[in-house]
Image (cartoon, rainbow, N blue to C red; front, side):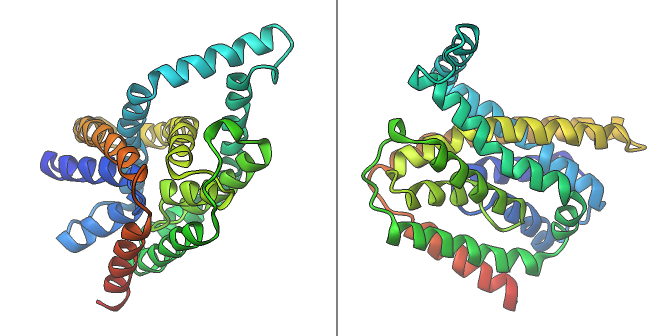
Length: 269
């Protein structure tokens, strides 16, 4: 992988990780359309580790929220009142929301790695992303704020996130749609989606580091990873700011149309 390829893929990752059009799908399709061929294991490790760039973007953008939630969470444990404070409860809800994807991802890791090498399958799952976005706009009343989220909402959004283990299913799209289906407003659903991405991307990156260490030429792969990481961090921060502003006034239909068109192009062309 060249530095230019790493930059392009990092920007693609950063922009599409948060905009609900599937970062994993684009990381499969962009190299395919450009004729880039990488070893399957190397590709999977790059895709996962470059997400740490977008993890940095989330942490920087939501630093105040994360510190507030983390402090209340630890204080609640120390005082033996883990659910007394709303911010402490939010910490537990974020943990609960990560469990389904972690369990399913570990149980079927080989299957998901194989799915990443199938562009046509990515096209099919892009259509699923479009369907999720349309359904959430149709059934959701959007009359609840983030402060009203319960453990049932968190678990429902967590199972929605598990769908994003499939290339072409947008993680942000699935989780935002999951929140909106529980009648949470768009901006609040997006904020919860971005916050719950922190433990998921952190855990996935740690697992990928193990695979990276086992590569025979791991040392030569580190610099492209670093370049992709930086590109993803910058573009990811821009995408977060833009999407939260956009969702305060607009629906998800634009992204559903995009996913539908791209999915059909991939399947038939």
